[in-house]
Length: 378
Image (cartoon, rainbow, N blue to C red; front, side, top):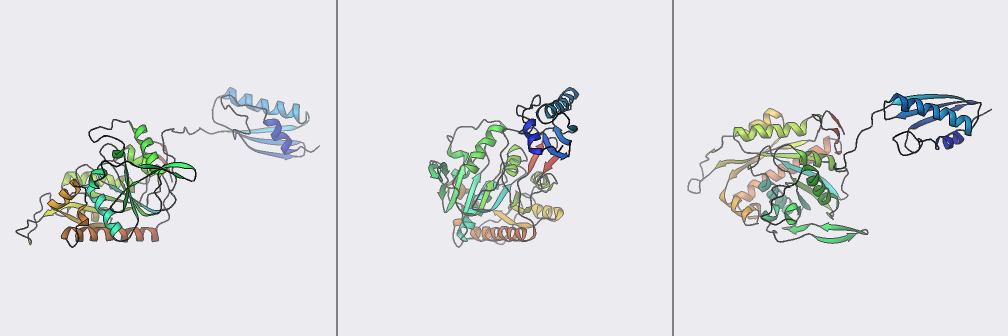
């Protein structure tokens, strides 16, 4: 007598394991079926260590094969128990966005170091260089891109792409922008828990018509928290730029930010560190530099961490004013500020090219547990 494997699988489809909800073939509990004449070996994978469920499943397999296939069949069941990984319904499903070549996250260890200002000026400088650029304002609780690009009163419109309704990013100074600030009143506080913030990010990332972009810049919130993990889980980040001022408090937090991205758990390339508010030069004393927050702190930190130093940005009143009035300072042609941002941006592009030449393509980070990020896979 020779047993038919297909016939056995059909018989096993009549058995449901307690707690599974599907038959054992459809649920994947039957890992393999091998026949040798009148012998059959069934490899069974269960997601519960309960002995009574294991015994019942094995007995049901033997009984069903004897009743529906052959009473003379010699049945052996090899059972393996594997703990099921609980799926987090609030976790963003990671995937690449077609048409976007490089995704650069701009981060800072602490707030108030000028991270959003740097992001806005990097974006307009890249656009002036001829690149197609977009900004995702991921600073959910303190969105500032609508102000910095003078589009506070704009709203993304809906467009139909391949039969699906999508958001069209607001465009200003040849930069495409999406921000939670477009969907809330200027005086309205965003009081959301992590899952709701992640859902909003998910919509701005995957339900938007970004089109073709050479660079997407992501303006992250300060610190190292839920939003950062959601971003690295949702998108294959090309690299991270960290912004810090030279003072010791800011540097300590910047170091933590670099450490998070460089950790084995996250492992996202750090393109380098930018030192903002590096020094002050009065107009009447153009040769003088006053290091109000310390000298070359971020540059020294970059050397200590063995990451590139991307440049320093001085304290200039026009940079602050330009951001407040919605026209990034790097757009001031033939100015010292424009030259500074040109140099920093060229360094970012150069490090991005090096990263793409020397490292494999980025993948999303798959976090299966949050306990110290101890079980993270890429």
